[in-house]
Image 1: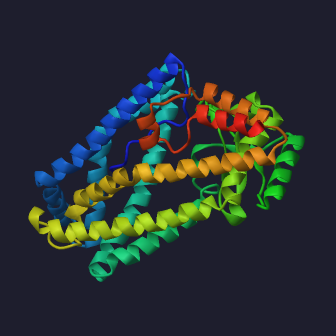
Image 2: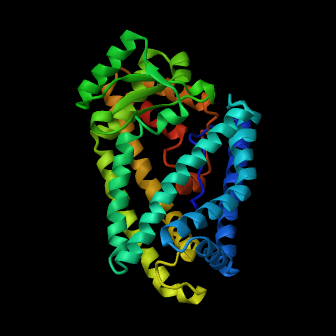
Image 3: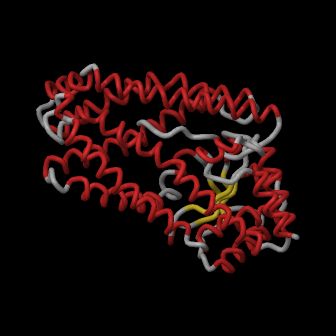
Length: 377
């Protein structure tokens, strides 16, 4: 619910790009503050306690009462969040010519996202509070382990279940490009299940590509917008970067960080609920009226850790760039692909240093291009 402020991908240097990113940042900050205010108001006014009492008056069984509480909690939050989401996800993207979504399509995606996210949130919170009732001392260790296992399962199944809910995919029809990318995967020693065209143009004018899934579900996906505007050597350069993450064991490193932060997060939640729960009138750990406090702890910790996580991410991105430059015939293809991505995604080339340090998971486009030019020399 409460998430650290996110920034749009990429970096760029025109006044139009600066205006776009400035507006995106302000809307992100506004959304973050609104989330924060919502949780604080629920906590300090006692509304969360009244919401819990209402749920229990409708269902004596804890799991069903929690379901009622979560539905109302999410419904109120969605009503508050909808204007910001509309401005950031629809109006802003259309104003700068980056979106192909109709209002109906945007609303449909919003409803699907709410349904999928809501279902996953319900499963997660039902597990947390059930574990609290069963094992009040060890609950946080059990839940941290279960969440990590679920993250791994979700990463494995996402290409098969989650992504097709929002996008269409089909095998890439260019046999020469498919052959080139399959050879790239063989050189990397990473087997893929195929090369797929990702129908991103139905929603956006931006371009992207990725290596999704793990093990048996790993596959290459390339947006149709990228296929339409990039040469085969440029597509290969983009995907070589993605393979670099797998070759340099960034997936395992990311998993290690995920494990560490998940255990830290659950430990902090356990300590906070035990220390501050009585102050707010909660009836023990398993009183789901403490959900706003739980989310405030998780959101606050995520925000504090964000610069460190992004610092490590930028280091991994640089390593993936190094692998890509070593894997392709010429750095020129990598440089031109970065230039095209910056133009199509309306990226900032030179974000302010403090913005890049705090919020960006990738080095700026300007730094990545300079790195490639130094490599070529």
